[in-house]
Length: 274
Image (cartoon, one colour):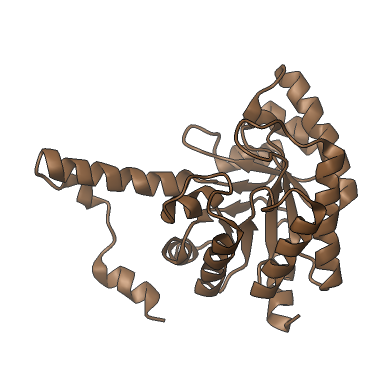
């Protein structure tokens, strides 16, 4: 691999120590450039945002090839490390996970998210099955001699099965198994309670928390032990929310107050005229 990619991967790994690494999520080159300009040290992508930008629902409906194209466009648009959300890996087998990781390494990503949910409303994969997929992803990275960061996502808290205590124990059990398979961190969407995060942080993997409006602030999450904090689809949802509000105002009231939260044409043009 090229020296520049190794530098990006090494830089991305170092950002987790001591943390927290704050990762706004991009869904296209424009959002990636804006996040970089805001001062981000690295960028994560949001599969949901990418899907919506392509006129598709979330949940691997965009397809593997278009997702890879979209990720390549984002990676090429910025000079900072990019962690790619690959949902469930675009295939159920370890071989599928290894294949997409190899493709992502070729385009220059510094890390990935891979989740244990096979789809909306489907039961989570058994930890041993997911571990085999994580191990295959790690093996592909090792084979390319590119130590990308593997952020193993578990949807234990999102599906909400069992009591909070049962969810915590299941997440920690999965962290142990995923760590053995080669994961670098555990991504726990749906968990924002500070006591829960502190308990998770005592487990076998560093914790990535996903935030939205109403979640504890970065300083509080860091104090609880979160090593990495990302926004998931929330920034994309906010952007589309403004677009919907502005369009509705123009079509109903005939006014344009929603247009106030804008960047100028000159500023936006300047960001891409590099």
